[in-house]
Length: 177
Image 1 (cartoon, rainbow, N blue to C red):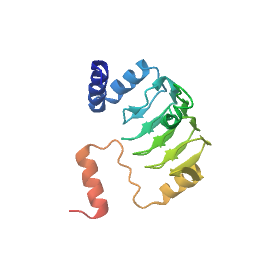
Image 2: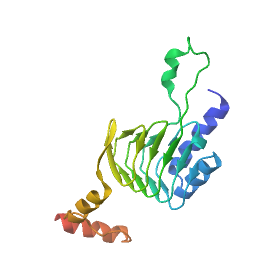
Image 3: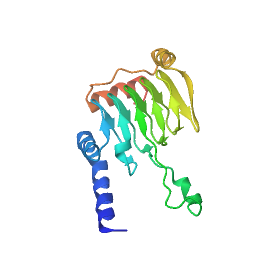
Image 4: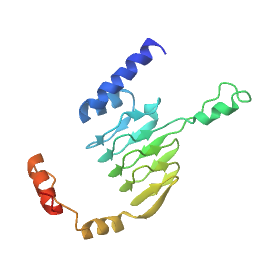
């Protein structure tokens, strides 16, 4: 491993603990297109971040990885000399990506989508979809998911509460003393 690679890894580890705005600023400097109002909880972006485009109001949870190359071509290097295979990744506007997802090259996710934790995506996914699984599939429309959220008795309106208030409110709701 070269000194440059070691320094890059140290920088990424530091950015994992940095603010959301510091992570976004760094990724944009690497050539990644990132819209406004995004939350980036991971630094697991491919070696070609300039092939990644993320829309407005996108949240990417921890340990998700976006990959822009296919290492499987390694198996054919004797036949296809010096081969590498790349693909773009495009995430639309208003998308939530859960923990531990993997988004593979040549993937497009439409606007207004929810991607369930642990999903592995490759291909094209339409707007207004709830996407889960390995391999990932569209399981329902986002309107159905919204309806399910609104019917859930554990849907609590805690956004904006201070930590202490939020904890007390949640404990009371679940009967924890």
